[in-house]
Image 1: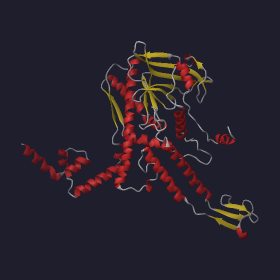
Image 2 (image 1 turned 180 degrees about the horizontal axis):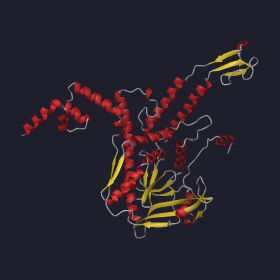
Image 3 (image 1 turned 60 degrees about the vertical axis):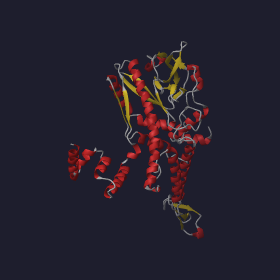
Image 4 (image 1 turned 30 degrees about the vertical axis):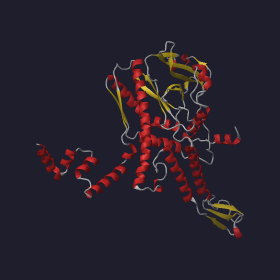
Amino acid sequence: MGFIDWALNQFGYTKRNQEIIPAGIMEREFGVLPAVSRKMADSRNLWWAMYTNHPPWESACIRPLGLPGAIGRELARHALTEFSVSISGSARAEYINQQMQQAAAQFGGALELGLCLGGVALKPYPDHGRILVDAFTTRFTPTRFDGTGKAIGGVFESRPVRQGKDWFVKLEYHDFQTREDGSCVYVVENHAFRSGQSGGIGRPVPLSAVREWAGLSERETIENLTAPLFAYFKPPMSNQEEPDSPLGVSVYSGSVADRIREADEQWERMLWEFKSGERKIFSDATQIDEGQVADRLFLKGAFTRDGNLFEQFSPELRNDSMYCGLQYILKIIEFNVGLAFGTISDPQTVNKTATEEIMTKHRQYVTEGDIQKAFQDTLDGLAYAMDAWCDLARLAPAGAYHADCHWGDGVLDDPETKRQDMAMGLQLLHASVMGPVEYRTRYFGEDEETAKRMLPDMEDLTTEGEREVE
């Protein structure tokens, strides 16, 4: 470690990587290799460093704006604004629905992580009559994908567990394996290792060495499964880092990472402009005693011109041009990640006509629609895994279930858009292009008969229509 790196570490500017499980350990313990190339592993480390606000370009001068987390948070928040999920169909379905509702509280955070880090695995497990769900990002390493790009095998790394003065981690391997007779069986293997407080994999130890894992089997085979006991979400976008890889990529991968770096650097320039442009008064040190003036405002020395006692320094700031430059960068980021202009950039700098505003919101609407479809597939897999655990752990009686997800209209259903749409409809109503009944059915969600009853002068139309039918 060089002196600069040491100094940065001392002041909290620590570069943090989240390494995947070493390929040698996976091959030795489970006979498989990670479906993650060195290039993709480096990219995942970069996304993690950016998400945790410790990118490679961080320094004592450049402090990140936190854009990666803000991007993922905004995409996840809008995608789940009106989200609800329900499981119905039987007594077992009611039990699964209860577990799903409890797990739904962490869906926002899990989706944010998956969008930022290129994927997230949701792994349910039984716990004293309940089914809990853990979200794994960098602690899950995929090993196999099926023909549709769905992860069906992988290794999960537990968080370090302390017992006495020692720390331990557990690797849990999941995959389908084919027997000699051609039948398929689902395999789960558990291996324990010594570790440290911050993680890492040391020498193997028996599962019985850790109280929490003493009751686990080192190898279990499960019959009659058609999907894994976990669900894997990856962002619905092509992998530009490695096009032939089935792995997902971060929403800020590729050139977006470069734009985020430029935004951080531009922000640092703005701060330096303010700092370097602070008002100063140069004073003659030979004529002013120590403590007579404030050190922040007065600079004492033999540097005044013409022997003056005081000379003011107050340069004109270039903050407007620098601020505009930052906003241009933020708009490029918004466009590339599928956000509407003004989401992370300053809305006051976005001049849009009504048509342009609808178009930019439509871009985000399409982005969120793709995210919702991908996440719904993940939730279907999660519901299947919960149903499988009901059989394996005998948590609920047999029965069918049906999962229903509701997403709403998302970004296009915000109050401002509704007000603009209703104002336009009112103009059409006053121009006699739209009738009162049509207006109420469109903007109040009423059927035609209800709309006529709600209009005092329209009651005769309802009774006349009934007489005509008779």
